[in-house]
Amino acid sequence: MGSLHLDLKDCGNCPIRHRAVCSRCEPDELEVLEEIKYYRSYEAGQPILWSGDHMEFVASIVTGISTLSQTMEDGRTQMVGLLLPSDFIGRPGRETAAFDVVAVSDVTLCCFRRRPFEQLMTNTPHIGQRLLEMTLDELDSAREWMTVLGRKTAREKIASLLLIVARRDASLRKQLPGDGMVFDLPLTREAMSDYLGLTLETVSRQISALRKSGIIQLEGKRRVIVPDLQDLIAETGDDVDGGMII
Amino acid sequence: MGSLHLDLKDCGNCPIRHRAVCSRCEPDELEVLEEIKYYRSYEAGQPILWSGDHMEFVASIVTGISTLSQTMEDGRTQMVGLLLPSDFIGRPGRETAAFDVVAVSDVTLCCFRRRPFEQLMTNTPHIGQRLLEMTLDELDSAREWMTVLGRKTAREKIASLLLIVARRDASLRKQLPGDGMVFDLPLTREAMSDYLGLTLETVSRQISALRKSGIIQLEGKRRVIVPDLQDLIAETGDDVDGGMII
DNA sequence: CGAGCTCTTGATTCTGTTCAATCTTAGTGG
DNA sequence: CCACTAAGATTGAACAGAATCAAGAGCTCG
Image (cartoon, rainbow over the protein chains, first blue to last red):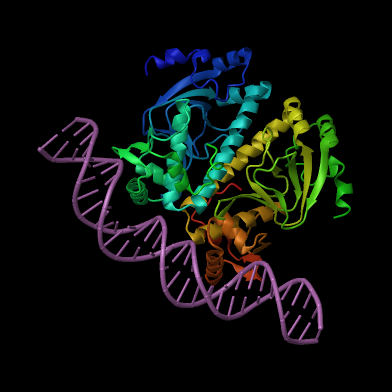
């Protein structure tokens, strides 16, 4: 990780350049961005922001995975987003964080001081355009997830989560998801239960049930093998072709 | 309603002017908008868009209420948004609708042909800026709702919905919600169940339970009286001061 | 090797669903 | 004017799925 900062100083080498909030920027706009950007790192498990915190920056995730979640008074928590490389943290025009952000793995952020970034947005339309596009995509994802939370059974919820992780993993390797594919779950059983609105016991039971049905195979606790992708899709309850965008 | 179209031709008289996607526009920008806008009306119960439909327009809701919802293969449906006057329908850059939109009450839309509107967005930054702001607000609302769907009990879900409707109703009358306030539920028990991820029987039971506990009083099926607002808030499970943004 | 995680599995409880009957209300037509 | 109908709403009884409580297994790391 030590050499990462050096590699990244130049936006030209940035691994998320093509998907992040800056992806539409022209060279001159990038120059301005480079002046206000800086990197921050967080170890796995560390909090990045607490709900209500004053936010002095907005940021793009460069590497690693974070969760966005909300906690009720009595401790019940619901994950409301899973943030992956190129995803954006923060909201121009808002002083304080609305949700908790926690690093699940080691995370590197590309941060922009909030005020200058807001200033920049009014001048360089390409940032606002891209941010709008990303926000609309996230809104669609959030709405799809509402159907998972509100209407699916525990088994369907687990299958849906596995499929999402499988698809994201495939897209990260620039492959298509297919039969026999192998991927690692980035989340603990408890984090999965927070994502799915279940208890961790139910998550564990349903993963075992899917394994016993032959829908998935496990190598250790985290590595998943999908012998037949269509079988997994059938378990999600979604339409076979349409459905999940993510 | 016949005279409505006449009244609205001029954006200056528009009742949603201060909150809609056009709220930041300068007079010259409004002139361009006026050239591509037209009104459409739908009766209560009519579909406005089906998921997958080709969308030739985007629109603002001028009057009435619509629902945004998703239906699974087997008929389970989840409402993913409640669209009120000034809310925006459609998404620049997308050809087809991602969700079903249905008019709950009689609805009037202010429509813009999609292509010219997209064109306009690249030229007049104020539209994109406002749309970004509205989309970020909706994303926050969707995320708050995910906590309701994933973690709240049936009673808490009902209380949360009542509170949201109460607050929106108060804000529409430009009042603060308070003790003794009265409002009408715009949704049937079935629509509420779709919103809350419950069955209509459970909705009915929990409304009765809240009535028997004295948290609310009912006049007919739809009119609700809240003797003590803090009592209702306490039933939502949310933090007393913070919580719901809507 | 033992401490402390994460995870799995079992037994029991309970919340919300399902199936079914009844009530209410508004609208219709004889 | 009033029976008749149909849609929405309520209520009850039985059931099912997930939560809760509890015990123990498997790993990782000092």
